Picture 1 (tube, rainbow, N blue to C red):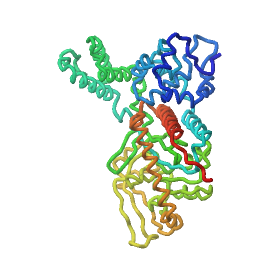
Picture 2: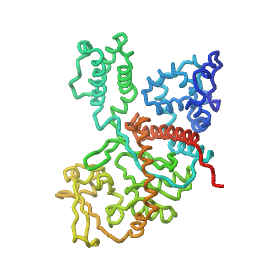
Picture 3: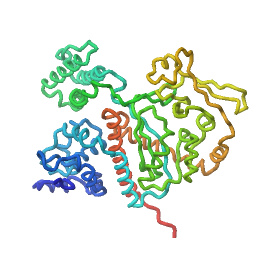
Length: 491
């Protein structure tokens, strides 16, 4: 039977940890803060207790993924660092001289042990429970927003992905030793995956034959990333660049290919809920789920702060029915207008345009009707008819032979007078200033925890990446809140 947690092997060198790792080191503090036995409880059914040799303990594997999120590295580089970094070995409950895992074990752990687990909700709930026990969350106010993550495969063919990585590797090598150009195999010029795979393998073999070349940190990292793509992800790449990723829009002129993470966060800057979706999903449609998940995590939500994307009519009604104060400015295009097929067209507040269910954004809009007479006016959005003709979702949407495809919203200027008056109040204006906090959290995820680009493939891979990154940022925030001086209660 598997023990609840891994135990460090008896070692004559264990005293090194007391010497080199400070008492306030973040790894010591996380180990003291979190009871990781929940990982064993959640994954017990994924392991066979009486067949084959004992697997590496799931808590140790889970901690490897935490380390990867705290310091984004390839699996190979992560394991390599754990060989000599005593702080890593201490965090992993390993003796200083103990052998590390094979990097391929991390791939198996992700694919075989974690695919069916709803880790995102579980890990957020664990951190919120810790924060509540420490009395770190004092209000029922949450801030909501969405952040996007670019797919590592960028709508490219598998061979184009390999070409990009091999090109970066060669460029890094040339900066160190330009004479290597003469030793490299002839580049593949065919638009063929097998030919490109063959070239990449020959390139890797050539580099590995040159003594000391891969020892250069930059060259070694680029080399290992190419090796991982060839060996680890190539089966998925062969089938699709990233079958789950979708095109989303930040503005009229800028788009991204990937995923969105919809976040709810307390004013103390702890993530209380998260939902990972494909890139084209509307922010506003996820508000109710974020509120419900935050409540399930233990937050008594009574106030929600968000941008104009969350002021849809259904959200205003939901907030009123559940006695929640919604701090979200009205946008007449999505709240005051009467429109049909609300489930098929979503408003992108950054671009100011509607997006159809296939992810296509309108190319222009025009207002029709008499100016100043709200009930007689409507905004008409025009879509690219040539794209509509080729759209896989055109049935029931595009009429064969049509010369244009439009979507209209009737403007009603008086329907939301209460909310319009509310957003002019001093309470609203003061509360909405708190929204910057979640934008800073999005920046932290992207710049410090590798959330700008996906580390894996597919929606499940993105959800796992999100679970680990959010767990880490919440733990770091809890430690910081614990360190901050607390105001004394009023006498």
